[in-house]
Amino acid sequence: MEKQKRSIVFYCGSLARGGTERVIVNLAEHFHKIGYRVFIVTQFKAEAEYAISSDITRILSDLTVEENGRNRVINFLNRLKKLRRIFKALQPDMVFSCVGKNNFMALTASTFLKTKVVVSVRAEPCVEYYTKLMRFLAKTMFIFADGIVLQTKQAGEFFPRPIRRKAVILPNSLNPRFQRPRYEGEREKEIVAVGRLDENKNHAMLIRAFGKIAKDFPDYRVVIYGDGTGHRDLEKMINKLNLSDKVVLAGRTDAVEEKIYKSSLFVLTSDAEGMPNALLEAMALGLPVISTDCPCGGPRELIQDGVNGYLIPVRDEEALYERLRYCLTHMSEMGEIGRRAAEIQKRLNPEKVNKKWEAYFNRVMSDKGKRC
Image (tube, rainbow, N blue to C red; front, side):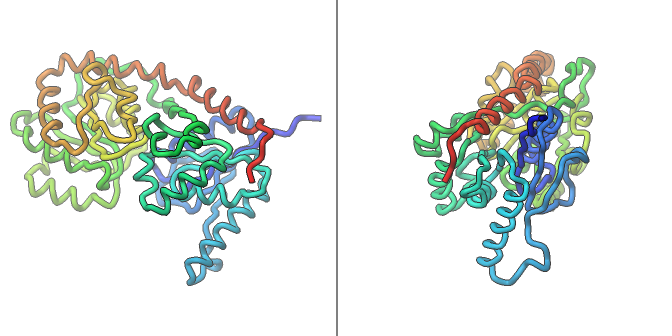
């Protein structure tokens, strides 16, 4: 008799185009490819999402219009019951949950089921768990998880020792589209950034810092890929600084690797990140990079300052201004910085990284212990 294939449910908010969602899709596709039964359960369907293979079953767990009532508490309990019904119907060997409240929902909905649950913190924990209640729940409920995946060592410092002992750090695999030889021709005179247009990404700092040097480097411009709630405010700032011909808000793109491949410089100005995919992808393409040294330590684990990129303090506009000026006046030196950055392709090779995830997931699923 053929042995039953193991099954995994990946549970998250949606498949919107973000770093966490990209990790979910990459993992789901990999485990599907090697023969697992794979399901993706999301609360809702976003306007613009990553595509998944037709053989991977997608299930929405949020309440329908008919199921939704006026009482928030009752709606929450009904969402929990619906998620539990989905888990019971699928009977997966493991649920892998990502981000904030989703982790609490996965742990609660699977109580007394045979399904193993692995929770994952993808951002700086104090940002992901932004209220006192959420922080308390994370520091208590996670002890009941069968596994805990963190992005960095620094993220572990948020949790009490019993949870730290239980946690593992697993890297994000590099999307195969970013595995290519570094472009060695003449580079486009563009400084690029990729990410949601919101307060945390702090693209405003890049715009202001570039504004201070724009006249000295008339051939260069800043191009920011991404969309979000901050679009209008950034547009107003660009106009106010008279940079409308120097700074472009290019919106979302399905081919970011093509858009930034020949660019001169990549900048990440976030206040907080987990392990930023946009940064590691830019490095893989061989771009010299400047990044804030933000919690929870992801950029610092990727960049050796002055060797394969540059780190600056969070929200330090003057430091960014000085580093931009230095990079643009030493472009021949940036070539070597970019070549060393591209070596990250070896470290985050998808085949190598995915084997680590396989080994960990199989270890969790094979553990005979049961959660309450």
